[in-house]
Length: 257
Image (cartoon, rainbow, N blue to C red; front, side, top):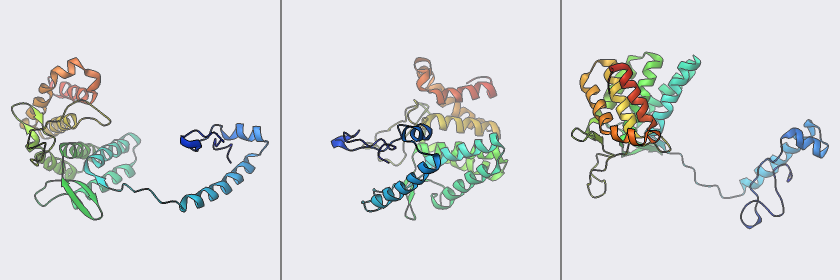
């Protein structure tokens, strides 16, 4: 078992400890140790039982089980697109359940979203990315299912996004709670990080919803966001790939950005 999981006397981590890994594939390991595949699997089964018993006696790490609106918006979009590409309604149904949970458990009576849910409690007023990614996910779900309720939900979420928009500067604020660095107007950058920027998701939501509903006001807001980022797109396009896809959508459907 030690050889199979790469455990050595010197270790591969701090203080001679070893992080378990598999330096060989099963076939090579069997050849080197003159084992059959069945013998190896039997040894591994016994070894895993020993490891599980030892792990169960340790103090367990904290479990991060919070539910984040923005993250669910992204998975709703992924599931909806997967349903379309794979022609599998199962994924769209899963996306629908996630959306229904957010509206049932993470939405205030006035329609405002909460950012996180944990231990039967919704808390923290939602940030821009929560509205933007959820709106985009709902639009993808509508496209996958043709369910008019998803379009109506997207309309409501996008309407709640308006307070984040600075109509003069064409920028989106991170939050509208008035708690941003002593009430300074903190605006979201449009460059992509570990996830796409909420600015690009917000611009996409405005433009796509405007295209689907024929609402010119929404289209104007989406174009406003694109125009505000035009210089950054020219200077650093590889850092704004999500916004470039929004630009591509605008050019394809409206003939201009």
